[in-house]
Every structure is written in C-alpha cells, then in structure tokens.
Amino acid sequence: MNPLQKRLNNLRADFDAAMKRLDIDARTAELTGQEKQLEDPDIWRDPKAAQDLSRTVAAARNQVQPWLTLRTQIADIGELLDLGDDELLPEVETQLTALEQELLELRKQLLFRGEYDNHDAILRLSAGAGGDDAQDFTEMLERMYLRWAEKSGFTARVIERSAGETAGVKTSVIEIAGSFAYGKLRSENGVHRLVRLSPFNAESRETSFALVEVLPKIDAPDAVKIDPNDLKIDVYRAGGHGGQSVNTTDSAVRITHLPTGVVVAIQNERSQLQNREKAMEILRGKLVALQMEQHAESLSDLRAGESAAWGAQIRNYVLHPYKLVKDTRTNYEEKDVDKVLGGEIDGFIEAYLESQTTSEKS
Image (tube, rainbow, N blue to C red; front, side):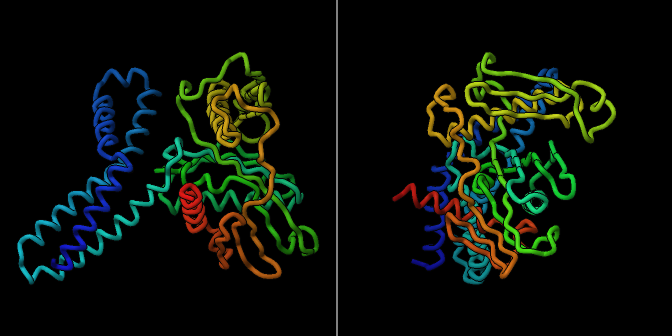
C-alpha cells in the first residue's frame, strides 16, 4: 500500500473515532435546531433568552465547525490521492501532515469529559496569608488570567473587585467565556503560593498565598435546583467604585445558602436586580463545584463547612533565590516565571488534564 494512503487511512480511523467519542454529529443536529430557533422573530420578544441562546449557538459553532471543516478536507485529500498523479504527491504529503496536526489539536477536546467542561468559567481570586504581598500576588494572578484569556481568544470581564488598601486586590471575580473555558481553567482551582523578595518589607524573603476558585458558569436557573427557603438574601448600600447610582441606593446583594453556609456578595452591577441575578449565577456555580468536590449525588446531600478551598497549595511560584513555577500535582514546571505570569499557562492546564485521564484509566 502507498505510504501516503496508509497515513490517510490512519487519519480517517482516528478522525472517525474522535467524532464518535465527542458525538459531533449529534451536536451538529442540535446546533442546527438552535440556529432555526434564532431565525424565528418571536424569540426576540424575550431579549435575554434570545441573547443567551445566541451565545450558546456561538459556543457550539466554535466547537463543531472545525470538525466539519476537517472532515471535508480529509475527503478532498482522498480525492487527490485517488487521481494517481505522482506530481501531486508532494502537495498531498504537505496537506496530509497539516491535517494530522490539526486532528492532534482537535483531539485535545477528548480530555474534557466533565459535565460542565464546555461551560464558561467564573474565577474568584482571594488574597490569603501574606498581607500586602498576598494582595499584590492576587493582582498578579488576576493579570495572568486576563492575559491568558486574551491569548486564547476568550472574552474576560471583571465583575467584582475589592482593591487592597496599599497594593493589589483583596478579591477579584472574573467571568471568562470561550470554548471549554471551565474545562481548561478547572485545573487552576486551589491555593497558589508565591516566594520572593518582598517589595513591601525591605526586600526580605516573603511567602504569600492566594486562593483561586474556578466555577462553571450556569446561566439557566433550572439547571441547578435550589430551594428558595434555603436562601437568606440581604440588600445593602454598595461601596467603592461603580458610579453614583450604585453608591446611593441599596443595590448590593448578599445571598447566603443556609444549608452549606456558602455566601456570595455582588455590588458592581448597576441595579439590585442585576446584582441578584449575578450572585445567583455564581452561587449555582459554587454549589455545583462543592457537589463535585464532596462527590454528593444532589445539593441536599451537601455538607456544611467541608470545602477544601484553603487546603494544600497546588502551585508554587518561586522568584527567589531561583526562578521556577511548579505544579505540585503533576510536577510540571516552567523556569520562565515572567512567561507564566504573562498568561502562558497552557502547559500546566494540559499536564493536569492528561494526568486526570491517566488516573481514570488506571
């Protein structure tokens, strides 16, 4: 058999297996139905529902379209090879190599097996022990994730931010939208540790901590059943930045989930209703994350006070006496700390996903 034909056959087999595993044909059919819904003028009578569906369609299209394009390209290469023209063989080999690389990239989607991996993500960053250094470190992580989102072609929006008195931030909540945003970023969930010469304490060596919580963004209220009787909702006057109308009305909202003690407070949106909707969205994500963490079958099985949020650190960022970023779970490391803090964290993400896949097989 012609070596190029053998490579093409292997490519087709790998492609078909991946298509089946990811159920691309079913996703395509679902996408077609959703696109038809958007064409119906009546759907725009509810602008929010229409916009939510439009975002869902855009995300689905980004996931499905590359596979459909690759299928067409594989068929085209097969037709070229069937012509039996030796002069075309160099072109066929070049294109075949490119398609093999494209499939290699697309097959990374097989690493995303979680129920919410294809959702957008909400990151909540909190400064831990370390005073000004911890708040500065938290701001460094905030910048890192915003740059990662930009490099990845994702959209990011800071929806809540509490600045430190001297430097950095106490807390920052970031919404990141893109294909498999939660699936990629869930590897970042946990405690991050920084070791460096402190710019705030006569350049003494300091260790500081920041917590990164990664939550799936769940827009639909019906997706997570929360008993209204389990909620305590407080409204109060927003403080800090946000505009005059924010600061002069009781627009800030704090929601407490009584069975678990989970609290979400939002004040940066323009109205009490918007703050309440955003707080509920984050609460749904936090409860789902807690459910996965505790391996609970339902929200009613969740136990209060058992979050491992401030457990052992998952990643160390060492700037002194040497430079190294190392993940404690996978042992993946990068010596170029500036590159990592500049948003290049895909190596850590992929190492974590591959380690999860390996542990599932063993």
